[in-house]
Length: 240
Length: 240
DNA sequence: CGATCAGTTGAAGGCTATCAAAGACTGTGG
DNA sequence: CCACAGTCTTTGATAGCCTTCAACTGATCG
Image (cartoon, rainbow over all chains, first blue to last red; front, side):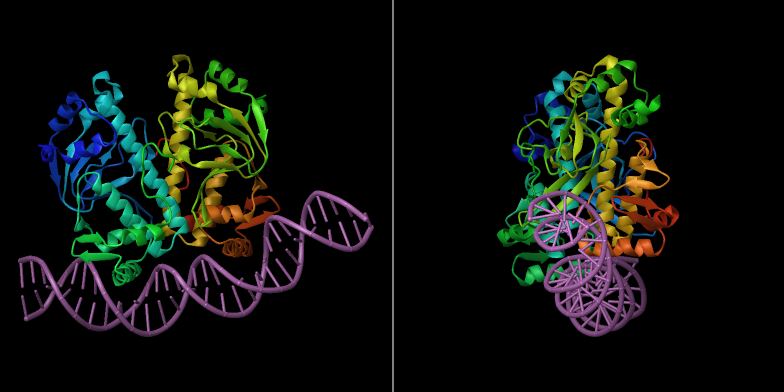
């Protein structure tokens, strides 16, 4: 049954057909569990060890010398690291597990990409598109941080998370899991923890969202979309 | 003499040796002049027409439906558009000329990239590295917009511009040309025009910079670097 | 039960935006 | 040469968003 497919395949197959050989290759990858706070990517070396996130959340982070830090990008189940077709600068950022995570070592996938293996054409193309979509989220972050208010930023991020989790089947009618602290969301949005908390309260008071511990539900996505004000999807075909 | 080399070659050769065939190919490209305000990239089509900027400034811009707009990246002489090895999401942003510009149509270069032409290996590699560096500037922008104050953002951008213009020989002891209005800089930094003007004044009062119409000089780069607080270079070899 | 952590709320202040108007600079036409 | 309009820049005053500091709640855990 379809439910048995790992989240990595669910995600990659949204970008195109995967051959049986592709699916076999991905299913062979060996999962590994790592605790929250561990570094998934050590950036000192020249080559980033590629991996795919199967469960849990991680983040690409950049720290300033004085202690400030910006979460540049949130990594959700199904997202991959180091599988871009050509060197991609985002892969040089430190990656930190925000929750306990399960990752698979994706070295064989990268080998297929580098060899431009003809029998894995679908897989290679899917990885290329996945990397492209991640770049779109980076661009969205620039506009979000540069032009939008706290309320708008939060609405935009919630919609982005909803979209991304939905395509790997992690959204239910009761919302989706948000397994990180408000501190993490604040750092992703360039806001203080206190102000994020207030903005969340405002959305709750308006009935736009509902919060339970570790979980969020978008009750009025139309209100959020109107506030977010610019496209949150990273469709492969569109210009964005 | 070396001064006869076009800025496109100056820029690309900072990323590695170019063969005589590479130089010949780039020198063959035909320059075209376009007025300020013209769109260098129409994003509706699937393929971005690749080009290299020889003189003048341009910007990758994203507009919000309500009129706000963010300058995502400034393009300086020597920068290229659409010459990444693999599709790069930044190339889907609208590109607008901020000043009158001279560009060359770089279709032959892209052909060499796509063909992975062995006789243009140096050129292909240089383009790859140039695209990589542009991505680093996008990442820098995220941290700048998310974590830094107006003064810090401005210091950081000025240092970045200095670095980038220096490597194509456009920095003199008397500073470098800044051929755009404060409005443009403000939109790149996510600040209001008025506040940018005040921040510039503050830097002038401190003797950190000197402004003449269309030109800026960094008098105390150490002060600016201390304020900017995180690396502004996009060195190919470093992790950033 | 004390301790720790995530979340919440209040109060005060600072950084930045907005509104408004006045000075520079440029190019044009009389 | 000057008047004039237009754009760019600067400055003042005011308001608002957001941050910081601080204290308090509630939950989890040894």
